[in-house]
Amino acid sequence: MSDPVEVIVFRDEPGEFADMAPDFVARAGVPPTFESLTLQWPEAAGIEEKRRLLRFVATATGEGRSRVARPLGKLDADGEADGLASFLRAVDGDSWWLGDVAIEFDAGDSTEMIWFPGGDGVLLHIGAAASLLDFTVLPAIHEIAIALDWQLTVQ
Image (cartoon, rainbow, N blue to C red; front, side, top):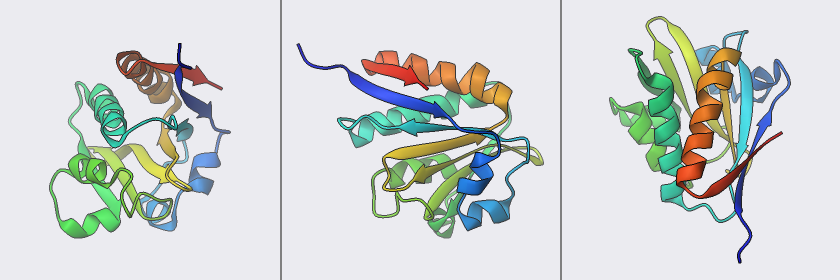
């Protein structure tokens, strides 16, 4: 029997997201009410599994909302209308590093959520209001982890 594939989600300290955000994200404006989660990808996770998780979480958090996914950093140069597709293509690519790419989910005139990879691409930082993280993002990660046959650990 093989060891379970584990995806780990860490709850960051309040205010930590703004401190971790690359300069180009900070310039776009991180709402002061944002809290954050840091997702640590399983070592065995492939690109398509990561993309599937991200797509699922983006869909779940956008349900019932009129929202635009705006690419930030090196992604904004391609002029693509669909920021999520551009962000998903970047997964594990040359620009999948802290400080190169991010995606901002806007609803009207407010930013609802921001994602960016961390460090060496093994982490994903997700910033949003605590209620969105607790009642939508975490349950969506849990649901897709089950579908991917991954074990979710929240710390």
